[in-house]
Length: 461
Image (cartoon, rainbow, N blue to C red; front, side, top):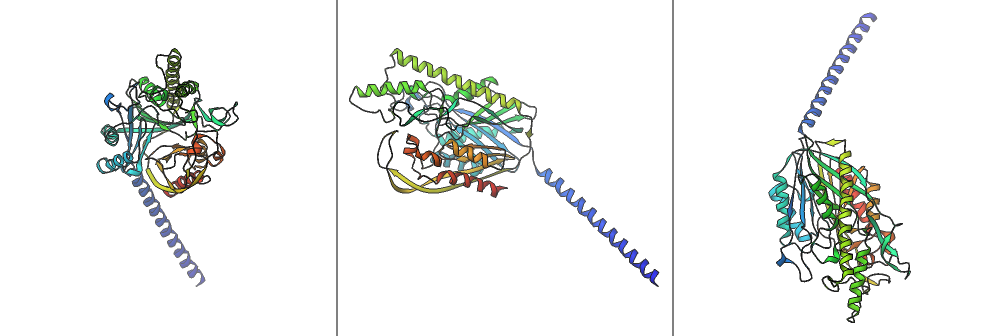
């Protein structure tokens, strides 16, 4: 009897084991089928790029403009992953809230690019002036890029360039805060590069990011793309103009070109000319178009040197971008596109005295200021965005804390903040024009921006 019972139990255990194995096997096959189906839904990336010449006509120039030095452009890259699209767009000069809102809403409605998926930034070149019908021209450039969509792959890389420098310094003569090349100050020398190629390795576009103000050509009082224009022009020429090279500004609020002496010298000439008329502009920004005798050999020499420096910086930065492009060996041909944008509000202040630098500012409480921050993720490449002029230390700290190795910060992106410059917390002790003019109270912007972007990244995981 015992043997019979043991035999029945053994048979039952074996039967249960067979059922379990069959169930596990079926589950494994179902899981494999699900993975396969998920992989099959990821479509081949497509990329298109375009640029549009938006140089103003002579009759469109402002009263203080003396003409056109070189052409300026809007440049755009569109990425399509089969489910959604994103756009990386840069305007020569400056876009604003109106142009950002009108152009991105139209992109969403007519081109299927969600507003939050657009990074619309500015070169912030001080020599471009006003571009008429800017929102229409932005949309037209993106539309051209959409029309050129083709199967493509994306690569990431970083390089270094030493053409920027912190511009807040203690003047060695006056012992007060002023503008100058602070070689010991914090300055991110990295160049962040996203490369786009067709499947046969033909270059389509490159999106590069660097932290430096585009101010070399400002004293010319003429339309110019400055260093961003010179860099993109050099890169595009190197590829027989079959590539679109799109600049984006990193955290450059306190970063100037390292060779900037000619601008200081020309500013001094303007100050002396105004002083001869009984007008003191020594502690303010001299107005454009006046105060310089263009026939003066000294002025001509200084301006010629500026042209040489501008082109040289374009060549040096362009060469580093090309160097990074050549070194990319890991490519994405399929990628998720995720994005988020939000507006944060911070306590505001209003300045009650004047002076460009070297004096202590006085303030009163004011309405809160707003900053638009965002995230665009293309696979494991992350762009954190801010719509203001952010100090370099904020950008480097954000990238340090990012959980993604492939991270950059794009500033003056997606509209215009109401803050003015956005210093990091430590820099509020410096009596320089960026800090003095900032409309945000100390102690709020740095962590507000960093934590705000990181929180959005966390929600997109």
